[in-house]
Length: 390
Image (tube, rainbow, N blue to C red; front, side, top):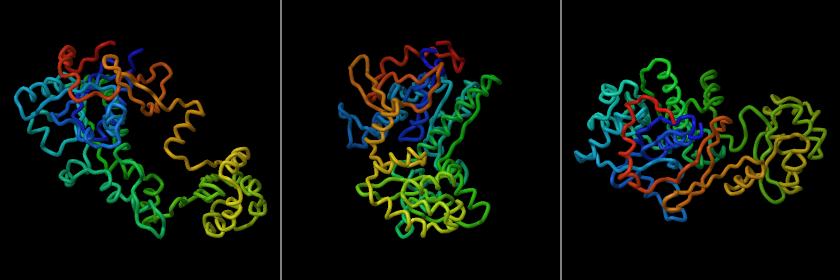
């Protein structure tokens, strides 16, 4: 499987911005032939600059579009629409995130395409589903707000805060990726494709996990705790002599070792802190006891000492430091892809999923707009959703 476990699967990618392109990039990383169908203006994120890469291309676009081919289809013209329909009708998977009614208007909706290709897996990504929320704009910031994430993010005495990346889009992209794989597996068993629906709000609510289950079980809405944890202590940010670090004590043994390491062994037997439940109940007193001790040495010193005692602790790294840290651990977090024709290259985060027998293949950098207009037709013999061997 040198070409990837999904070799022979064609994806007609009508999606734009982040959630859909993230899902289709994951499919492409594992061998799927992803044809990114763009308007003459291209994906919106091509214009989201700066920053740009060495070739002057948007790094936002580049983050989620490697391993794909770009074909421009102007859906407002007869020829462009015909080309887009031909791609969609011969695909194994169609992915789209248009406003409600757009795909139907162009005859690219699930029903129209399935009439031609019953094996098609059709994935729709929306902000708020296809019912009462169908017309609502699906922007990540908006979903973080109405989905409750901002209400639990930020300092207790500060304003609600968004996460520093479009996390809901990424989560939704991963759900779309998973759903498509499930639908392909079902097609293998039944010979018939199915529809995959994912939405940003549902993805966020499911990802709230313990905060969601607490709310549903008790009826009480959790508040903002800054960098502290609602159910574990100490599990938060502290300031050392030179910079911040986090301590993530997950059980009583770790707390005893933590107290010993920072020179306050009596905390380990103090009844206020003897169990996690007591530490959570007395978190303010605990923090008041811990903070001065941690402020006396550098963060790196504490991380080394605590790690030696098997107490989880780490520096608050910048993004660049995080990649350096992962590299030092042997995780190979960065890949470089090069266009064999132009020599244009791109450095990007590697796919985090590792299969020993069919690993991800980082083949080509994100495509220039319309780079494959003249060549995609030579692969247009894909037999309507029938899997072809690599």
